[in-house]
Image 1 (tube, rainbow, N blue to C red):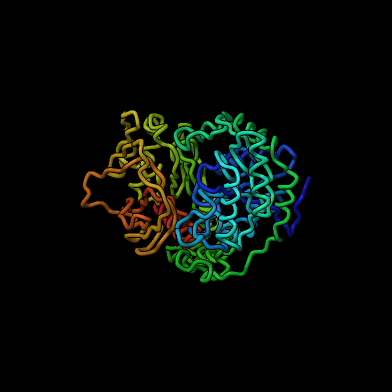
Image 2 (cartoon, rainbow, N blue to C red; image 1 turned 90 degrees about the vertical axis):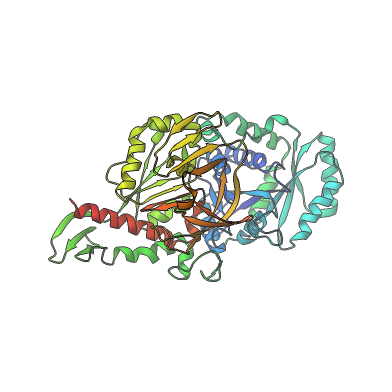
Amino acid sequence: MTISDRNTRPRLIIAGTGSGAGKTTVTLGLMRALAQRGLSVQGFKCGPDYIDPTYHTAVTGRPSRNLDAWMTSPEYVRDTFEKASSGHDISIIEGVMGLYDGKDPLSNTGSTAEIALVTQTPVILVVDVRSMARSAAAIVLGFQQLEPELNIAGVIVNRCGSAGHHTIVKKAIEQMCGIPVVGWLKRDEDMSIPERHLGLVPAIERGELEPLFQRAADVLMEGTDLDLLLDLAASAPPFKRQDVSFAEANTDSVHSFGGPEATTVEGIAHAISTVYTSSPADQDLQYDSHSNSVINVNNRHVSYTVQPVIAVARDAAFNFYYPDNLELLEAAGARLHYFSPLAGEGIPTDVDGIYLGGGFPEEFAAEIAGNQGFLKGLRQAAQSNMPLFAECGGYMVLGETLTDREGATFDMAGIIPAQVQMQKKRAALGYREASSVRDSFLLKKGEVLRGHEFHYSTMTYRDEETIPYAYETKGLRGLKQEGYAAGNIVAGYTHVHLGSYPAAARRWVEHCLAYRQERYMQR
């Protein structure tokens, strides 16, 4: 069954009145229910989140994508949505926090509402109606009136005490708000989503959450009009990417690079392709685009491949990557070589850079400490001046030791002179503007990437006075020095989104290319 065509993008945003309203349960149940109808479902997540997209991917069988108009430009968001939704029957976008909650209490910036407006997507509002009746209508009415441009197309009421309770709130909402209550979920404590940390990702990979996903679908289908939801999704206007110039599309967050076309991955790829049509770093060599090799001034071909290779750690310990970051590196000319430290693999041979993403290294600290080939390979890469980028979990592994929540301490790579300590209390959460403190292979001093922090660990340096910080980050609590940058190492707790400053991807790949050239010349 196909309900979409080339010019339409049936789509819905599942938003909540606040965190805990039930939007994740509704999203997962709806995705599974639609897939069981034979529809091809594409998932998206508003804001900087890795866990919910992992859920979506497990349920739909295809990678979910993040949409964030603060970290990237609105045009970048539209392009991401257009590409990822193409060829699928329906797109389901899960919101973040409450519908209007974001970076700024005085605007829609960084909120689900902003993504709804940018993508012109109908909103299904999930309302927790415990201990209320007609008051539910007042809540929905307030959400409608706060942003008149927003299309709140329907409501799903969650945690109803009974069918009679559902009937009462349905009548009140439909009378006062003029939109349908398309479904309801009864109060069910067994439907709670597990904690969003620890071993969650490997549990998903092992299929342990399949019963939960199916339960969400069964509960949703029991009280929801799926046909009406599909009609509301199909009522979305034909999707058109607006022609917004790079300068207009978020000038304070996205640096101009390559002109207006550089708001998309394709445009970025076109803009940065000049790195492969100009002379490499060694001025005695020139690139031959026909043979994909380097020739010297006498036109003698040499055995040398231009495409640099970046090793990307990817397994249950290192799994937090924005797909955009990986695609932008590939668009800049890199080939990505994935490997698994948990499977006993070391740094792959013949690579020119390393990318260690975030994840749950604390849950696998013993396995990581036991993989001496991996840790030795990191040290050798650092010593050889290979570009090495690590964020959050990867940053933790570069330290000297990692102490888990139970107090057990494990030796790590020892590249950064610091100890990592896990704690039960969250250490940081929120958006970050990361301004480079010094020149590096990623950023020049003063250049800015946008991203977020979310971690339960702290990094304690041996000498606080001599730390070569990577970034000065700006968040709700002001400015702070963060991370580590020395030689060709850039690391920190901030999860950066390269779409916020695509030139960083180009520079990273250029440095990997220069490293490859230097290795060749030394042979």
